[in-house]
Image (cartoon, helix red, strand yellow):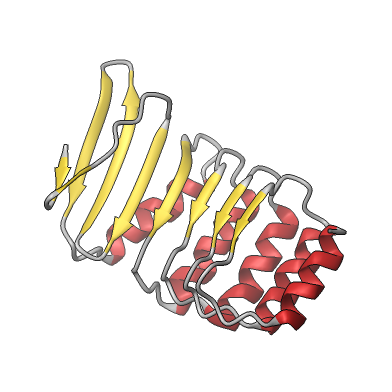
Length: 171
C-alpha cells in the first residue's frame, strides 16, 4: 500500500501493528482471512484513542508493535497509555518518536517500564528528553531486564545524563 508518495513496507510476520503519523493512522491486523488494513483519518479522535488503550490493556491483545510518530497525546491519554504498558504482555516494539513527552511523560513511562516485562525495543527520539528524564529511565532499567534497545537520538541529553545511563547499564 502507499501513504502519500512513499511506499510503505510490507509486514509478513506480525499479529497487529499500529502506526500513527500526523496525517494517517493505520491499523494492520492479521486474521484467519489474511491481513486486514485499516486506514483511519488524520483526526485521531477520542473514540479511536480509547479503542487502542482498551486493546492494549486487554488480556486478549494481539498488538506487538506500536508506533506513534509526530503526534502529541494529551497528558491524560499518555497516562492511560503508560498504564496500559504496565499490564500489556504482547507489546515488543514501541516507538514514540517526536511525541514530545518530555520530563512529565518520562516519569510515567519509567514507572511503566518497571512493571513491563515484554517491551524489548523503545524509541524515544526527539521527545524533549533531558538529563532528568534520562535519569528516570536509567533508574527504571535497573528493574527492567527485557528492554534491549533504547533509542534516545535527537534529545537534550548531556554527558551527565549519558554517564548515568551508562553506569546503570554498566557500559
